[in-house]
Each structure stands twice: as structure tokens, then as C-alpha cells.
Length: 135
Image (cartoon, rainbow, N blue to C red; front, side):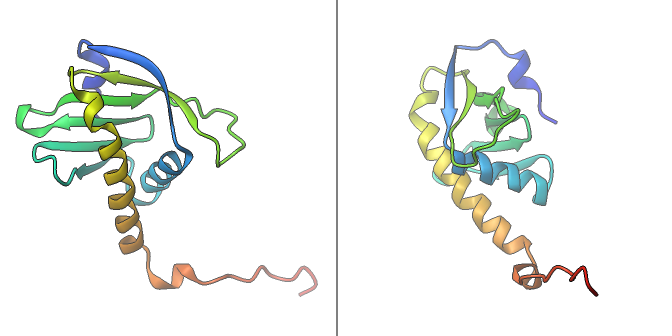
């Protein structure tokens, strides 16, 4: 697992929230596709998004995966509303990291959605009947 976002000096750190749809999609992606995912970000040639259960990190692969920004410290313990935003910490390692955050989240949702659809066999979409207790 990638940990450089915990070791590198931070340019700026602040409390933030991620929309529930992004958090839920990333959580499902990690559960179904693997604990650590790496997605190239379309339109941002040298940047990839690493999705781990505890952090989402934008890295520059041309600079030996130096972190650009990271969402971490998700406060999801006891979360009982799947529609509510999830508080977290946003770390910026570059002065202009804020410029790409929305674009990265939109790309994450699209790419993970496509990967999840491609990774599920068609029979997983059917409804399974629970056995009747009387049988």
C-alpha cells in the first residue's frame, strides 16, 4: 500500500467532505476490484489516482509517484446514512492541487463505474430468492 502521503511535507491541510456517491463508489471498488486501485486520470497526462480503503491519493507517475493531493482520515465509523457526505482530511502537496480536485473525482466516478460494470458477470444482476423457512 502507498504511504508516501503520510511521510511527505504537506503544503496545506484542511478538513473537507466528499460526496456520498464518490465515497460509496470508491468503497465498493476496493471491495470488488482489489484493496489498492490505480486509475490513470484522463486529460491529466502524468497523474494517476490511487484508491485505497483509507485514502485516495493523486500521484505524479513521472516524478516517481510523488503525491499531489490526498483525501484521507475518512470519518465513516458508525456511518448510518449512505446519502450523507463523509468528513475527511484533504492534504495538498502542490500549490495548484485544488485546481484538479473536482476533475479527479469526476474521472474516478466514471472509471470506477466502468470497471465495476465490466468486472461483474451478468448472472450477478439477477434477483436471488431467499429460501422459504417452511421448506
